Amino acid sequence: MFTTLNAQSALGLIVIVVVCWLLSEDRKRFPWRLALGAVAVQAALVLALFALPGSRAVLAAITGSVDALGRATNEGAKFVFGYLAGGDQPYAVTSEPALFTFAFQVLPLILVISALSALLWHWKILKAITYGFGLLFQRTMGLGGASALAVAANIFLGMIESPIVIRAYLDKLTRSELFLMMVVGLATVAGSTMVAYAAILAPVLSNAAGHVLVASIVSAPAGVLLARIMIPEIPGQGGAVADYSASLKYDSSIDAIVKGTSDGLMVVLNISAVLIVFVALVALVNVMIGGFWLFGDPVSVERVLGWLFMPVAWLTGVSWTDAGEAGRLLGVKLTLTEFVAFIELGRVPPEAISERTRMLMTYALCGFANIGSVGITVTGLSVLMPERRTEVLGLVWKALAAGFMATLMTASVVGLMPAAVFG
Picture 1: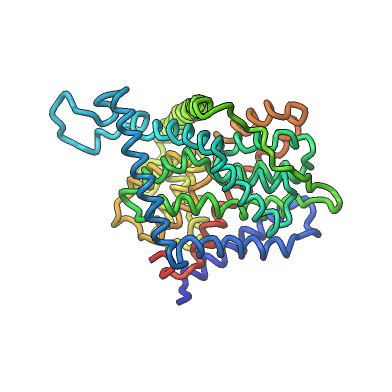
Picture 2: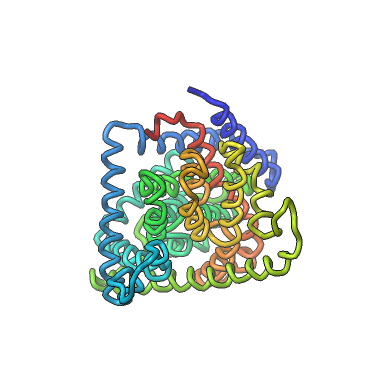
């Protein structure tokens, strides 16, 4: 049954595409076929992962796997950090929720998943899955082999690791293809952080692991479409053909585990540093503007962002009564990273927002498109392709806008679906 909320999502989808078209470098070359194909691919992926017979069993298995990984990681964390990671407490506990420590109970998951991802890549399991998605995007969305492979790698590896997969082709990418790779990197998340998000949302969202996985996969076609709208490919250019023999290689299983752990440690350190700095900066701004009062409460960055993003959240299909809280979460994601936004979403009581709003925000928040990622993107790509650093600097803020809107587009597509699809 098509409801008013579904109509809002449809309107949001149209608005996002129109905004990107207005920001386009060549409005005369709108990719109509790609637009229809991208939305169709998104809808098909959502239906395939939620509505097909047997899909629920697959999602249940994914959820079970995430739970098992969480328990296993917790054992390792408790061995190293003891009671700080949830081990036996040396004192009487009066508040169980107060025992949660982000640094010791969530970030270790990234280390384990990073090592496991490297091992699965070395065993050619993750490589085969990535190549499969690469071929899918190549055939259905008309991408060149190198671009298609980078887009697929972004779903599982992350925005800096995926360019390593096509490192031999980076100098052959056109400006449009480079922009596309940046946008998709900001619109999706890495497999290591994906599991952490699912662990955060599991207590308040059923099938949290399935939703987070689907969100990252489905946002890839959205990122491709919006990137192509904003910077269209010049006919006759682009389409670098990759031989699909990635330069991301490990010497042995132990080498994969060690290097994967080392890479995961860098991710953990980057996340920790960015969170400390940006949370501190927002707190500083709140101190500076806290003397101003509006509607009976002091003005804060969170309240201002909530007001600004209310209509944006509403356009994804969120009811107006929930739009204030949903808008605040979108603002937190953009300024304080999606990690903080997911933690905040996990703290919202079940009665405060509807199940639909919580689900749509899971999709809208699931992407690296935040201000902190701008610096990470520039730094990472500058190391891999120093000769194109100026070009990257000129594209990165536009890529941030497109990546942010890509996750909103994904939420809108999900909002278009009948509620029965998600059970």
